[in-house]
Image (cartoon, rainbow, N blue to C red; front, side, top):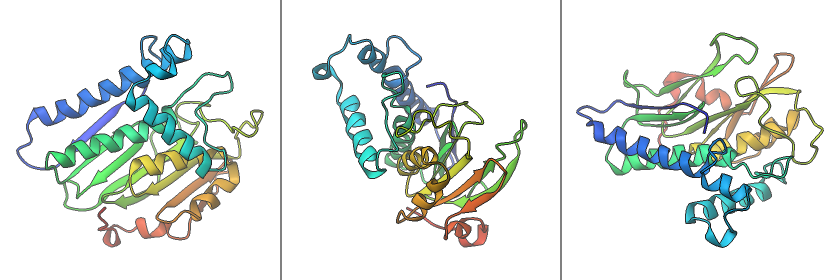
Length: 249
């Protein structure tokens, strides 16, 4: 869906077939949900070629999850775009990364990370035997520069913003809102599906998004506004010290 996928496995004696299983799954997701492919199921739905009764079970599930997220975020998450088409990317990316992580767990993999376009799910420890270190990128720099590091194990980390992919998130409640107040918003959650969907919605909320995250049980967040000022949730600093973050799902 227009984003790179990276799978890192630390366990010993891993066979190529493990990676093949994961990437075959992502190919399946791409073929079904990519709005960039004319032959994908979502494209056929948008073209009115495929009827609702003909949708796959996974498509029906994504629509259901999107509707649930819309209700949970007071309407700030919506897969219906301003031009009237349906773009489920805001929920599919985190959902698919989480499913890929579940596939690895089912295969007995103990230490890994899966990333798609900045959405990361971690499990176990990294190659140094420590919690996974994830950098939050400087949204004002053209070069890859980290402004904050978080250390997690068994959790998901998602960042929403316009500095990499351009303006791909909008405010469903005000289509004229250019969402310029916040340039980056990162959410740490129990898994990447949960973190990603709430990061997208919180970014669409603008300045109040970080306070929405602060009110979610089991989530932490870090936002950067247009002036470069950072605001974090009350427990975010628990994940900035490597010695204190041996946390497992």
